[in-house]
Each structure stands twice: as structure tokens, then as C-alpha cells.
Image: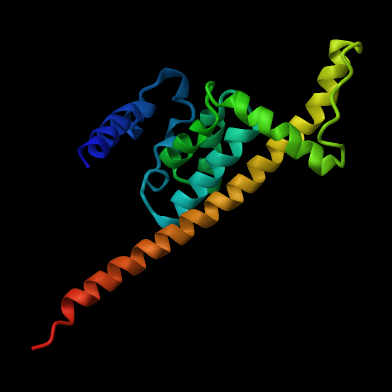
Length: 177
């Protein structure tokens, strides 16, 4: 597991801390909100909220997701580092894939045929409009669905982790004499 340990160490170094956020000049007007300790603690509910917030904003807007997610973490009392990590679902390398996948999902929900393509002789603005609605709807579905799903998975995973720890603890204590 040294590879995981090295990744975790490098990842912790890359994430900003509360103190570094407090000293950024343009964040000073809102820094007192961002450095609240409950937004940085690893608690079940705040991590689940942070993951859901980050997942939602990763799909809903293409740029600046981390800042918007951090602002919503203050409002919804979510874990800021968890939200920041989840916004990386849609990075510049993967965003095209998500847009490509959102198109058929949006078409499916709009009731359009999956094989319909914009006509090549129409204007590029009409093509953009024809593609835009299904893509926006698909990304919205990914955002809402991903947020709800990730919230539930974090809560379930945390509960399972606690149950496993209790089971191991009880198994170690119940040795016959």
C-alpha cells in the first residue's frame, strides 16, 4: 500500500488548508465563513453533503465548480475538501466524455430518437440549439442524480465502516476464558 500512501500524502499537500484560504487576499471578505472548523472536519453528515454538493456542481457548470461548491458548502454545512475533490469528476480531460454521454441521456428524457442527428445543411446555431437542449438536460440529470446517489453511497459506506469496526472490536473482546 505504499503507492496509496504516497498518493494520499501528495493529495493532502495539494489541497488548500483553512489557514492558506484565510490568507488569500481576494478571499478575505468571505474567509471567516470558509475557515469555520465544522466545514473541514470528517463527520458523516458533512462529508456526505460535501460529496453531494461537489458532484452536483461538477456536472452543472463547466468552470469554477470548486468555488461554487465551496460557497454552497458554507450554506449547506458540507465538507469543503470533499466537495473540492468531487468537482474533479469533470475535469478538462473528461468533460468531453460527459457531454457526449449527456446528449443521448437528454434525448431519451426529451423523447427524441437516439439516432436523430442535426441536418448538415442547417446553420451552426441551429445545430447548437438542437444539441444544446439534450446536453443541458443530460448534465442536469447527472448533477441531480449523481448528487443524490453520492450522498446515499457516502452515508451507506460510512455506516458499513462503523459496523465493520464494531464487529471487529466485539470479536476481539469476546474471547472465551
